[in-house]
Length: 510
Image (cartoon, rainbow, N blue to C red):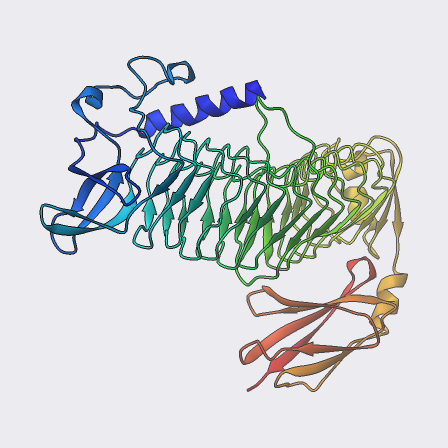
């Protein structure tokens, strides 16, 4: 714990020093509030509408003091900020009169209550819309009421003993490290916050975090996830960063999260590098159809036993599933083109896999243990390396009439441990059971008739090749609702067992 606190202090102080501004001018005036506390104000608008910010005391005695530059400087002579004497309750008024002018109090200034002790509860008026940089940094505030705040800036509450915070619906900006180091267990992110910045809730022992529609990006290390059982992300999310931070001071914790789900969205979603890595207890992962890209080591060392990668993903990046020793099955999308280095290394339970027909390239050491059988839907042999597959015997099932191509292809022909088998039965059987679509054209509802013994998934693409809808085949006649799509031509694919497909054109009319 001491190492964690020291690292937090160093990280925050170094970051604060990098952002340090020039010395403040002395406060413009001071006034006593209704509770008898003396507050200091800086005029932010000297013309109508007249506004002020609650600021810190800059009497001449303290004006020359320097900001602390390291953790050891905090509290030392010549560095400490002035400590005011406040009651446990601090109420900031909505307006204050000075020199005959009524000023509206609209913000809490930079470092206004930096390091202040004694304050327990802070009540802000509805006129305050911004809490500025390090406003309550390492203060004793354990409760705050902020009904109309729109912006909470960098490090505003870093290191405070806040255990519970209600973020107002008016909030639209949360700065980096705003609540870093606070002992809070639960947080609800308002829908107005579009970006959850890095380190916002770093080192907070969160057990629950709620996201709402409107959130677009979660940056790296935005919050700790080791105590959270389930994570649900909104359909508006477009990028998810890594949620763990490994340093000399703070080794990787045991992640308790067992379920991660994403709501279906319309904007492309990208999962960043190491996004869900080390989620060793993760058992269920629901990926949405708008997912387009996975980051390096995205699912490394997770506890997943099965996963379906949606259409639209074109690459399995480096070490994406490395060390997933519980992974037994994976369904790769037809859109897949490359499978990168070590992407399935140390997946000891993955005995068989089907490679979609559009894959053109493998990296090195993609598989190194476990794999016994591979079904290749690729009619043209992909580019591989001598160590792409393990050195022990592996059985490959390949499409009809492609044996000569595999035997003549570089590297493939050199692997003495490979055995090949051409399988034409699945394709022939599937071609004898074509799909039937009616009505076609359609105004919305259409029926797709196919053999459920051979088919498993229905996909609808636009003319640009983007997958718009997907529907599992559960019986002989499936019902599709295309009413949400604009008028035009679309392509319907029925995916059969082992990714064999049958396609047809469908017309949507108004």
